[in-house]
Image (cartoon, rainbow, N blue to C red; front, side, top):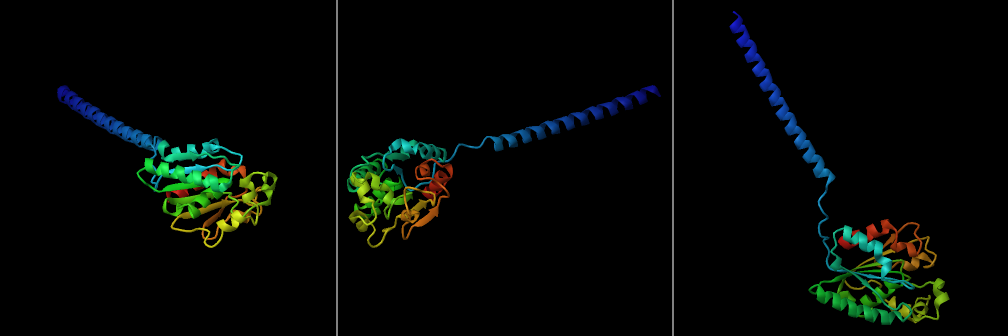
Length: 246
């Protein structure tokens, strides 16, 4: 009787061992699957190349330089833009805005040649937005520009720049100037260009703040942002990128 009992116990032990191994295998598989799922969530893929209609040209304002765009350039790259798609246009901000716009026209032509003739997006801060508008309105930019984004541009003038009226660019953006009368005569947003402006009621340079708006554009309140801060505030940069990617 001992041998059959021993055999039964041995068989039962074997079955228990097999069941334990099966449970261990299942647990290992479940752990591996969970780890894979966690890694998939924790390590996202690199950002895809941004879906843009063309290269981006950033235009600084008065008393500034191309370095003013460091934050936006960094965020554009993080959003998937190639470095070769981001261009910063520098110019002599004291000269007439007409001259600066003519230089911008040359720059746009060169950029488009390097990008197979694609249309460009323009982002201008302060005086740079006025330069961009003059190019679009007067120098054929309606045929070459997809988006024009204006950050605190004094499109209808500001008396706050009277302190630099000895420079042509500042004289041209004083309220009622011949330059602004010509720039704003008729349609302020001509062509098929997508116009977007950002303004702030806390802007102490573009006064009144409504001067930064354009008839026919999407005019957006950026919140309480100082004039120079438009190019430094992450929330503004995010909205600009969203506009360019539409």
